[in-house]
Amino acid sequence: MGEVGEWRHLCVDMQRMFAEDTPWHVPWMARISPQIEELAGRHPSRTIFTRFLPPERADDMPGKWRDYYRKWWMMTGEHLPRGFIDLAPSLASLVPPARHFDKRTYSPWIDGRLHPILQSERVDTLVISGGETDVCVLATTLGAIDLGYRVIVLKDAVCSGADDTHDASLELLHDRFSVQLELMDTEEFLSEVG
Image 1: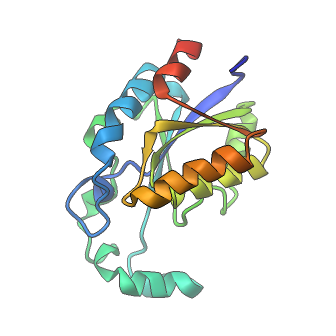
Image 2 (image 1 turned 45 degrees about the vertical axis):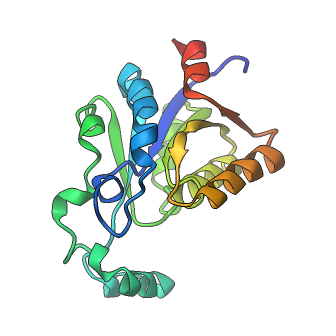
Image 3 (image 1 turned 60 degrees about the vertical axis):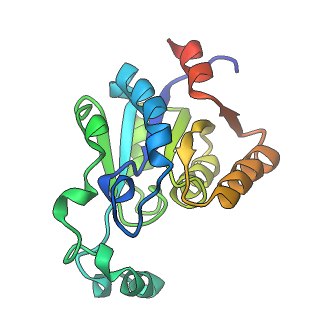
């Protein structure tokens, strides 16, 4: 793997609305939680949890997002219990010193706030975990690559509700972005950084 550099663990959307019984439930989340808890628990001050925040109402969003939330109306703020946007309890207890970063889109990079924070901390490596591999994790990873970060995706700490596209996403990232990205297991990464 080589020298890790100044790294942050970017844990994508490990929230109650995906972990619990909602239309967006991701059953695999329970399988990857131990790896995420291990990494975030050992390095909470290096961990940033992203949270995907639905709007209060579908009409609060622009363009096709409006249509998206008309389809998923039950996941908007006016219908979803407020606590469901929170991190899973085992992770929420790590904040602080871990941080959270709220976003309205699949990618945390779109509104321009996250990159300057990481740059001010001289971060050059992002270690990515969370869900879903083929949606928010993919958007987070591709944005990080575009911004020039070295990216490590923890293949045993990402999940999806769809096996085929999870596998295809990891294969795509491994095959097409091998210069800028590494796939590894959580334990392998932890053995490098302690």
